Image (cartoon, rainbow, N blue to C red; front, side):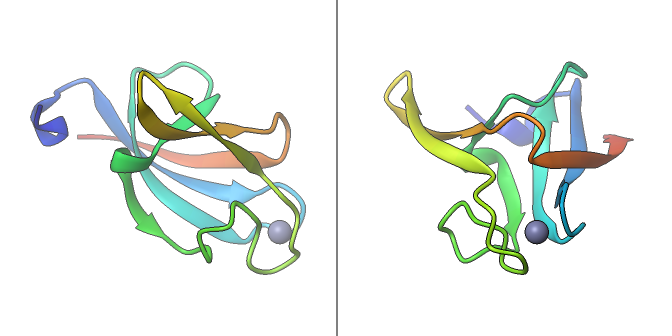
Length: 87
Ligand SMILES: [Zn+2]
């Protein structure tokens, strides 16, 4: 499945809610609240891959397998989203 072929996706930027550090650029489907990130839709990763903010060190997500694919469950309130750039 080519995720780039979806017309109902948004490119968003995910930031740390404590220090405002930029974490991910992410391709999100639909415009609901962000609760999880699928690894294969992270377009740009500014973290060290340890699910912690590279600046303040606060954990912002936890690993979780969803339908046998690696995903990250966002810890509520730890991030905020910028963008909603319609593609
Ligand atoms: Zn931070």
